[in-house]
Image 1 (spheres, helix red, strand yellow):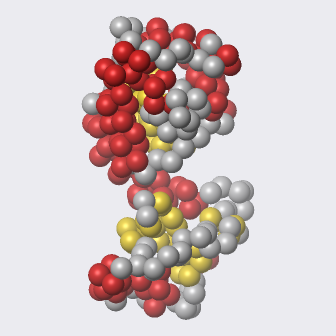
Image 2: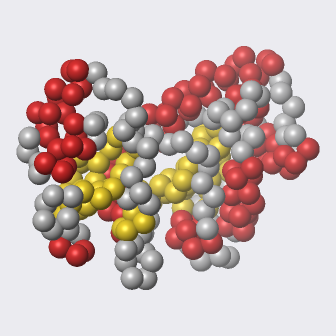
Length: 258
């Protein structure tokens, strides 16, 4: 089953030089795939797909996508491929061929970013999450993770960003610039529903560039929502979950609930 029509991928004109480069790349692909390449899609890899189709994964404007060439070679379908049980085969292909390698390469950048520790230093599981102080889903994610954090099983590392509201950056910088950022983060979470931490201009002055660096890292990784969370699975593969994880994703990320 194929779900979702062609997204709004192909708006706007491309520069002549970009068209020429795409045309050179496209000549190696069947015509139906060439049409996508000429419109700005970068093909990353191909694979055998169900139903005799050939699957492809690619990127356009920093976004990952999957598309499928029909057996006659004359048509290409862009969208989500589901199996008979409703499993998202497109997401699995994108994770394996694009996002996994990209985020594995980026893992050292996460380690070197400006993050706030939330949980035990002895925790077996380290999880990085891009957190905006004004993000309700970040707040809810922290509430969901509380049992694992309090049990000492998980350490969240909040990469604080300021992207959602006018005072997101100043709140993030106040937390990050505090003498005890973890305590400041907890104070913010405890008062989140009342507006969160009170902005301290001196702390903002000291830490606002660190928050801006986190913003740039998030943008460079192509992440567009908070929370965006990255962790290593049992095989050491880096997995990214964008948005609020569902209960199944939460246990895959953190292990059985304590």
